[in-house]
Image (cartoon, rainbow, N blue to C red):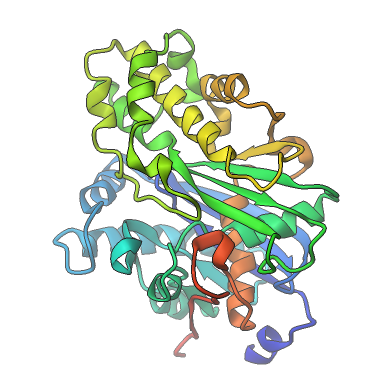
Length: 374
């Protein structure tokens, strides 16, 4: 197995798994890659967290490895990832698995980040080598540790035949954008990529829906579509010091704790519409940092299914805003696919981040590789 992984010129099948800051569930997807090019995309699967499991994960948010709720969160996450991987492995062969783990806390300013879960547990149960702990080395070397999908976005741009700069916007719990120039061969090369977190995206909306209506999200943006934006709240939101920082930069899920408080007196419809507008305006502010205007903004993640959020983006940006699914890529699985691609890069000693994507001083290959013990 190690020889197969180590053969730099051989494309292998890897499973990537991702549980995002939206706390909705776990995505898993197969990708055929040599760690440089993407050759094919395979089957994918999704496992929703139960309300009880979501509550256990939510209770551990903000906690470090010694936190009182971390063991429960790790147990929940590991079990969900194992079950989903077993589903895919039942009908598909894979040489490697990329396991991101649930991010509970992220504090790059103090050189620490925490993704719950142990890749060795998965390796032993699934009998497949597992790459995990993708962010710690980047943070240890002075980087933000996020976002990590940009190198995969660069590969995707080349896969779909893009011949000019384009941008990928992932709207998960937190938003992040990657500007890529597919004409440059190596993603770690200067001027190939620029990436950073834009600001809160789905997380505040989901949290508000949970508190006010007992729902996990505003499905399709239906509630927000009948609401009105409070422009004063949006303007006050933009006064947060994060927006004056130069990229690369990254956020913790709860880096804007006052945002929900700011909409507390609004009716539900106006509150979720205003939160959608804040997310879109954060993206608009971020796009000003792009080295050149992208030919399109390809939107991925759950936020692209929120019609109100997509309307707010189109109204605030001068570039075409497009659902990434229209290109033939899978906007539901791009993050999971990214960690399949990154797992192969880690196993082959290739960098997974660079100064222009996380602010690390030099290209860094993060991640640990755990092999089955039996």
